Image 1 (cartoon, chains in turn yellow, blue):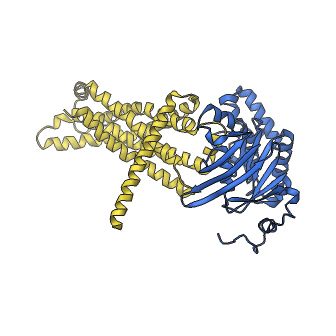
Image 2 (cartoon, rainbow over the protein chains, first blue to last red):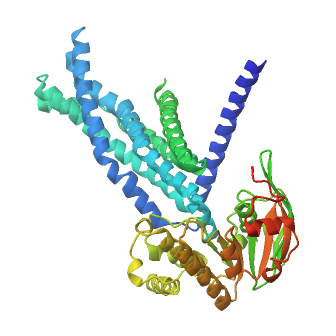
Length: 257
Length: 253
């Protein structure tokens, strides 16, 4: 019996967490149309989340694009299809790897820092101080971060896609003997506008989830250094899992016949 | 005037407040004493609406504050009458000292121009004994005593009618504690504000208080003017003042 009770407790706990996070998300979105707004906070979040993430996005995607080209070439050789490298790199990067890798890097870089910052603010009573100074923490802390991440992630994904394809191009042209002009021509001809649109849409959703989880777990933080550590860990894990799950659902929605 | 009637608050199975009754007169300085973990901070946060009480009535000048909805204009107006000094200062580390002090003056209903807000911030910093060159520093660059002073400057920046002090002298050396006590007393008197202080530092009590209330076991055990505290005849109060391990207050908690 105690075994069943334990399972029940876990299930109830998970359901309660999903419910709370959903209410938190709805509350966040509702502040979009309810002043006051804090444009300065939004601008600073855009810089932190967007601009300063560019190096990590570039590094991640260039190596992945290069490795992808090598793999497709080797795999394609088994049935004499080496020539499809540009097309597969393009579609693989834009449809899947670009948004997912950038999403996961943002979960690592941005979700963690948001969660740790907000959790520390909570532990040191800075959140309470905000309230006593007539400032709603949801408007001042949560909304600017979530909105910024949702807005800049499509741009980061676009940059990541281009750099990833460039990684494939560099390997293709320099290592695998592709003609440079043909490689670019094949890439451009093969990609459909809908591939790019869905890629950017995925980016927006992943950005929303990543920042939301950082804020949610930060605000829920327990006491002390341990509370901050736990909040940060939970936020990164939740953001990563949600990004991968959302990726599957969106792929199913966008591309299933 | 602030009134608490039969205020209850539990966290899970732990009953922290079990029917607190307390009246703080307008312009008076009330100090609440009591051991660690007796719910002093919880009582204070209930008045500010940071923690909703489970039961009971809290009124400020006759208005029930527990009904104010989070984020409503009435609640903002209510909070604009308060200043609070947090135990650890609770300064925002992403903002400079003057931006912290002028936080309320840089946004919301009390918004002023940047120059004006900065000027007021520097004047308030001077009031708590800090020089203007501190204004551009970040809170992490200050000592504990200086952070407390900045917190105090922020609490009084918007000329509040009611000021709360949460353990203002904890973690300070005796001389700095004395300085802070004196500042609190002076500021409360010159602003004519109603003050509520939580502390377990008896020196602080004697320096700041008009009235004293002792919180024990989730209820107000004794309340009266500070002059009558020593002759209260209440064994709990007597034990607390003397700091004796012998008496009705359990030392194993």
